[in-house]
Image (cartoon, rainbow, N blue to C red; front, side, top):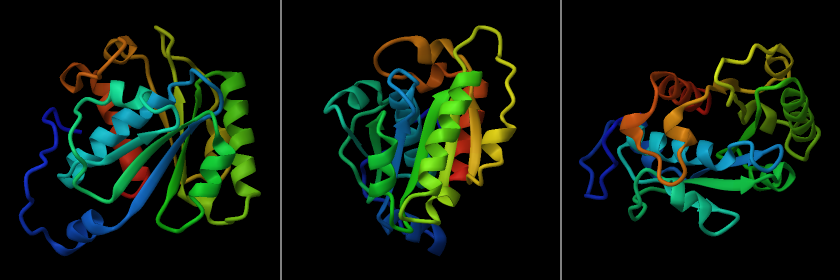
Length: 202
């Protein structure tokens, strides 16, 4: 992630792999195991981070028609065919929409014993869905809102076969309502977001 917003100005020619990433249509569907898990916050962080890495403005859409826009660090017209869609607490529909090789799912849950069990259940439903390869294109994000980092066994989630698993720790900048101020984010948040991008193949 960068502290600077992506630009909507025309982009110069880029080397092959990066140019291909820019022009390829791809959708990341972010879904929570329940309401209030942090799905919209994760989607906003991901939208900004992908845009910063590719040098574009990513399309951002959501199921509720407005909550994601209120969290985005920057609002500008999209300049790419990459989309981040906030699905809310709808893992099943997210999996159905992601059933093409270019698309992927991010499952968001709480970093608690019960939250991890919920994530495992969601990932199991993806594994037994119509696309047998989707689990390998899915990433789990565990959101820890405790002041002291939670100590939980994340092994069961990693062992499901997901492409990656990331823990997003408590961050005062994320706890504030409204637009996320990237410059105020904790280093741990930036690191977790970078790990999420890498797990998704960026």
